[in-house]
Length: 501
Image 1 (tube, rainbow, N blue to C red):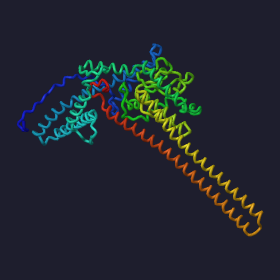
Image 2 (image 1 turned 180 degrees about the horizontal axis):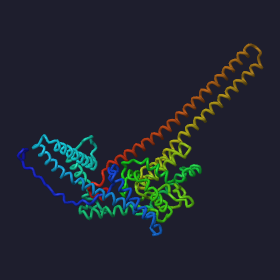
Image 3 (image 1 turned 90 degrees about the vertical axis):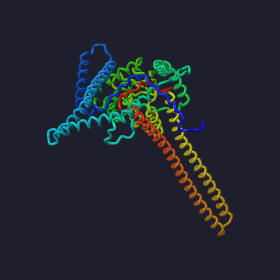
């Protein structure tokens, strides 16, 4: 059949009946600018801590008290969110009120009171619409947002489409079968992550892989001075300083509490958080109080004589240290600062910086990749040392040859001077002196040239290492920006059970 614009077009439409579950709660950072929220949350945290201080002998661990405090904070934030939602629902009534005032203004255009009321109501409505559009724009992950954008309908539709596309509608199970039933999809995802985050399996695999790998690279060790520099205490004040360096827009952990919340209420949160860390680290058999499976190259322990957390590489506790995102970032930031600032030798400093500055990951192979990168940096530096040694050997050989030649020429000149006393002897002596001077000049030139070459080689090696560091830092910043773009905006809909396999 030929082509024609009169041919029938068949379209199939299906209703989206795939249910979406509730999303994970995230703290709304806009509440920080609300004085009413700040006062309310300060009072609630102080009251909670006061009650806990009165019940010191109730047998509740510091860790459970911290979890209860976070739950209390989450409940308070959600209650305040419902209160704000109720206020926002009044914007529809305000639109009707604005229409009524506009009709009154049309009937009485000279009434100053009606004009003033109309302007006030219109201004409040514009502010509410702008706030609503901003929230929808953030949740929709729109990358272009100009000041004053109020296209609320566009952003709301974009948010809805994005949340719909995030739903996992089908997935492959362990038998490589396509599963489409919502219940079976969730069950498949749960089984996958249960197996992935299995504590016993990951601990066993982690220790085996790390022990096997570390035995093959025994040269990658720290001196006693470097170990002592790393085994330093972390105090509450240092934790607060590390918190200040965290990005306010960074994604929160599984508890939904962001870094900006910790910064705002750090005065109240620092003591219970530190007590929680101390108790967890003292109880090595129960240290994995929040499930992560990262095999740590360094362990955390507590000095029982001093109430400070210790960053140690000598502890025999083999449980993976774990915490939520913000608290782990606090410890990692401070430990990174100590490790990179206290080391003296450049190669070791590069190694330590690369070990402690790699992005967090729950997969051990990525940790091994980090170690491979460290070894490459060490090998590059060693190559520079080998080149330097090679040039030193060349310079020494040239100098020895020059000295031997000068000695031979001098002996010949002396022999000639002894045999003959004519003017020819004087000429020979002059020639010998000139040759010796030339040889010395050549040796000096060779030595200077060799030193320059060695300096250039070392500079190139250092530049290569620094470029690798810069590239790694840029990759970390890009990954953090992508995480922030994906996580900012709070709990918009989408029943994401996990990543696609």
